[in-house]
Image 1 (cartoon, rainbow, N blue to C red):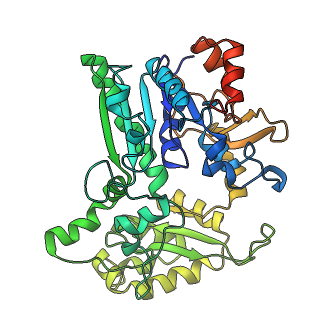
Image 2 (tube, rainbow, N blue to C red):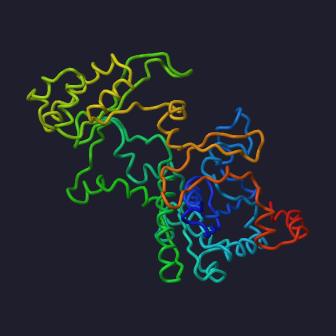
Image 3 (cartoon, helix red, strand yellow):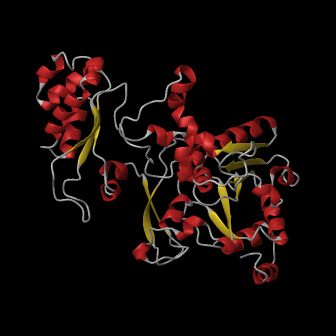
Length: 414
């Protein structure tokens, strides 16, 4: 069945991770996304592992193939005048244009919003640069890892007495992609009501700051800087990750690298957790009876919890806690996630044959939502470079095979 965005076409100028994360969501919802790439400057993601069998190749990057599922792919050098003209023709038959170059780059290429709206007056266009299109730092280059410290997230992350920490991934990239997809959907809804397109200027810096508003308010409201405090949070105790019993585990993993996350969100959950541990008397211990008491005695509290979890399997702890209404779950390895019975029962993972026979069928993370009336589906694996040249240049744009051959010879379609 068609997805909710069936009939919407996206001219995708994006690259690396943030932009493709945006257009991935649109492809998931049924939009036809035409990803434009150039062999002159291959997308960074195509050059990153993991590779099937450990053999590098731009068409075989698991990183690229994850975030470009369900898209069409063409090769087009938009640095050349003829390439830019073809790009305009693609935009003219599209509804959305998306790009995530540094501020001002798309305008210098002659493919900015004011230029493209001449060929598509009701176009919805999103630019999702690192710093936005206005302001003194708008031309700066940015990547996801820089967004974490830039946003203030690193200043909030880490253990007490430790320096600021990274969060372990380029959080700014996929987070920006989700914000961007939401903005595009809102603009499409506006266009449906009014017939008017519009331009969306999104800052990846600001989209990352949007998720740590409480940290910012500590200063704007009280002039304070929140202290880094590891896994602890002011509203819950216990709230942490506790070591569990050693066991035979995956190759390359230490046998004692087994943990469980436990969070008690109320006094009632704390009482239930005391019962799970077989320590019902602790629920009325003056040190732990209230959240305020547990926070004051948090070191002692965590020592007691850790002494209990270290004798148990993390999944046993999870089952005992969940049965009592206490949030708990082990940090899972990649293999445990891929084989997780719940995720597989829900059909979260996607397995589609790839155009590169050496890639074949691989398991990828799919979409995290289900819609009752407009089911969404990853309709195919990510494209190899130029996989849809014939369809886009020939079928959509009406070019002859001779024209395509000549443009390929001149490395415009390249």
